[in-house]
Amino acid sequence: MNFQSITLDLDGTLVDSALDLTLACQAMLADLGEPTVSESEVRGFVGEGMANLVSRCLSRSAPTTEHRLGEGVAAFQVNYRQLNGSAAKLYPGVREALDAWLVAGLPMACVTNKPIEFTQVLLEKLDLTRYFTSVVGGDTCEHKKPHPEPILFACRAMGVLPTNNLHIGDSRHDIAAARAAGCSAGGVPYGYNGGKPLLPSECDVFFPLLSDFSRLIDAA
Image (tube, rainbow, N blue to C red):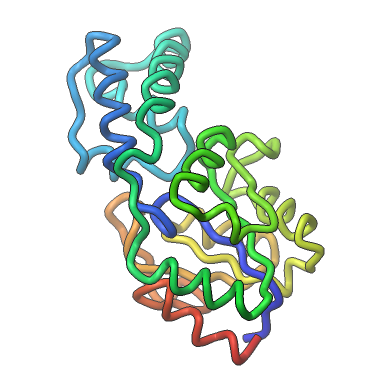
């Protein structure tokens, strides 16, 4: 495999943010007088952006109207601003991988469906900002993953061709986005995948930990 840059998903790939998100969802539901949600449920809801997360929490009790969803998103944003990064932690091997790629001089970009406001705060709190040439949030482009636009945007910002980029994520949305963008697709078995972990056969390269991907530096 030959690659000159790396794009990485955030939640579920670099960072386990489920507890932060759970606390914010629970506070949002309490504000709206709705039944609470468990962390295990939230883990199954994460991965397709904030509005989808809120909608899934709300629709557990009754069908969600557009007005109710708007109320939920607003309440979630207020609570998540208070909680973002408070309990989030890096997955094992993440810091080691980022350090290795930084030393190797490989440009990196974070490509996530999380809104850019919350993405930047989380990266700063976990001391990740310094690794990335570009950060692409869920509202940076017109489309979110699995559409290829966010990855293509990051590749342009890094000055690399998509065919020379490796995108790594934890879900099939990441693999689909990488394929559509013309990138190589890397996967990890953990993260937020709707209870259906990625399989090695679905990816161009697959490792248990992000630090294992640093083995590929010699091939880059």
